[in-house]
Image (tube, rainbow, N blue to C red; front, side):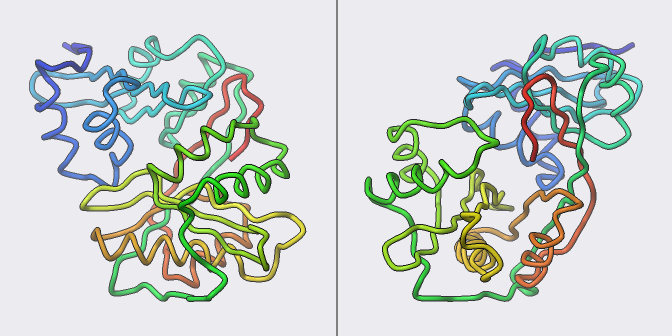
Length: 263
């Protein structure tokens, strides 16, 4: 018999104890359940004492983000707890049929899941790179991201909050911020690297490699590994990450349910 439980103070430690046996696999759930309970709702499927999987709904961003990690015989029960529409779901490749059954118009993209450890990392240092820290840095980040037409525009206050809360590194051409990379999750076992972006007018100059290298270097000073996701058809980005030492360890799906966004 399958029991679906809402994760709360009564069973939170039990869930964390199980998923912490593989922090890499469950990095989003480990971090969000521990550190942002205000914006995190999780339902877990149990068969006796065995965890069959979970669905996590995170509402701390402009668009809800859902993580579905489970065995195939419980995916439909867990998907009943997903939002009705307008969210992104991160999931296993084999769970796509169940998601498409629920949301036939969903668009999906395959992402490489890449990891680097200390012993295999190679860094590319430059005096053009520094950590973003000031309100002026936040303003420069806001200006640069105006060139990214596939994401909603944020307020300066939001960018100030980002650089105060998360390690972010930028590449500067003179006084102009032209590329950045950050870490949105920091755990002792692994940091998750994301948000890598370069102004279209400054691409193919190695800037993304520099920015990602800088945040990866900090990650590997403070954790055992760094990881990221990248679309399987984004060959320039994959090449840049491989230079640093990242290697593919698996695949995940980014599934768009009504938002129009792409990874």
